Length: 287
Ligand SMILES: *[C@@H]1O[C@H](CO)[C@@H](O)[C@H](O)[C@H]1NC(C)=O
Ligand SMILES: *[C@@H]1O[C@H](CO)[C@@H](O)[C@H](O)[C@H]1NC(C)=O
Ligand SMILES: *[C@@H]1O[C@H](CO)[C@@H](O)[C@H](O)[C@H]1NC(C)=O
Ligand SMILES: *[C@@H]1O[C@H](CO)[C@@H](O)[C@H](O)[C@H]1NC(C)=O
Ligand SMILES: *[C@@H]1O[C@H](CO)[C@@H](O)[C@H](O)[C@H]1NC(C)=O
Image (cartoon, rainbow, N blue to C red; front, side):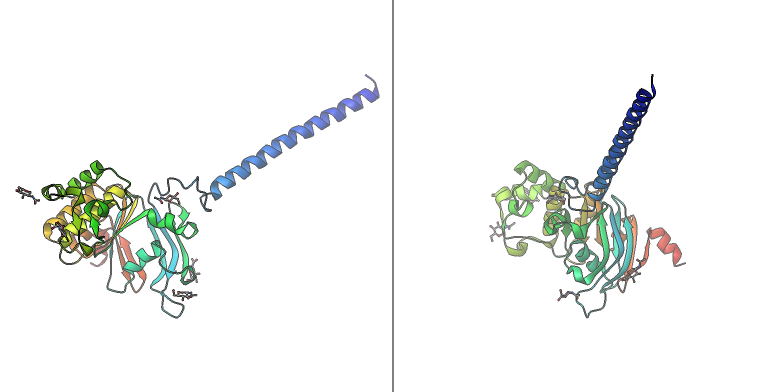
C-alpha cells in the first residue's frame, strides 16, 4: 500500500462516515418533525386526527373569562377547572352567578373578542374547531324542552339518521313506548308546536330519548325546576345513572337529590368558582 492509496482510503472512509452521520441526522430530523406534527395536530384542525373527537369527554377551562359586550362586566371570571371523563358535575349558584354562561362558553355563543383564556375538550382547544363540529359533538337539554312541530319520529331523529327500531328502543328506555304504541299513528304521531299536547315531563323524556340516540360524550343539562313530576324526575336520575354512566354531564342543578348524586359540585358566585369538590367535602368545609 503506498501513500496515495492510504490517503484515498482515509478520504473514502471519512466520506462514508459523513454519509452515515448525515443519514442518522436526517432520520432524526424526520422523526422529530413527524412527532411534532403528531403533537400539533391536536392543536390545529386536522380532520383525520379529530375523527373520533371527543372520545373521552374531559373538559378543561384555563383562566377562562367571558362577557356579553365590551362594556359589560365579566359573567365568568378566570375559571380554572378540570372535569374528568365520565364525571357528573352539579353546578349550583344564585341567578347570575354564571351557571348558564358556562354552557354558552362551551357552545361558543359569545363572540371570541369577548372571551379570554381557553376551553379544551380532550386536549383540543374548542376555539380552533369549526363551529358546527363543536356544537354537533355536544348535547344540551335545556330547562324548557325543545320540541319541533312534526312527527314524534322527527322529534327524536330530525336528521333521519337512525332506524325505527332504534327509535322504539330509546322510547322504551324513557318509558314512553307504551304511550306511543297506544297511539294509532305510532312513531308518526304528530306533535303540535312546543309539544303543547304533551306534558312537560313527556317532552323532557323525549329530549332525553333524543340524547340517548345521539350518544355524545358530553351532555349539558339544565334541570327543570317546575312541572316535572316525581316519577319523571326519578326516571331521569335512573337514566343518568344507567344510560349515561360513562358520559361527562354538567348539570345546572336545582334539586337537592340531583346535587346529592353528582360526583362533584361546582359552586359559582359572581362568575367565579368558589368551591369545586365532592358534596361531602363541601359540607364539611362549612362546619
Ligand atoms: C388570567 O387572565 C388574566 C386576564 O383575564 C390575566 O391578567 C392573568 O395574568 C391570567 N393568569 C394566568 C395564570 O395566566
Ligand atoms: C363583544 O360582543 C359584542 C356583542 O356581541 C360585540 O358587539 C363586540 O364587538 C364584542 N367585542 C368586544 C371587544 O367587546
Ligand atoms: C365531531 O367533531 C369532529 C372533529 O371536529 C368532526 O370530525 C365530527 O364531524 C364531529 N361530529 C359531528 C357529528 O359533527
Ligand atoms: C295503553 O293502553 C292500555 C290499554 O288500552 C292501557 O291499559 C294503558 O294504560 C295504556 N298505556 C299508556 C301509557 O297510555
Ligand atoms: C297532538 O295533537 C295532534 C294534532 O295537533 C294530534 O294529531 C296528536 O294525536 C296529539 N297527540 C297526542 C299525544 O294527543
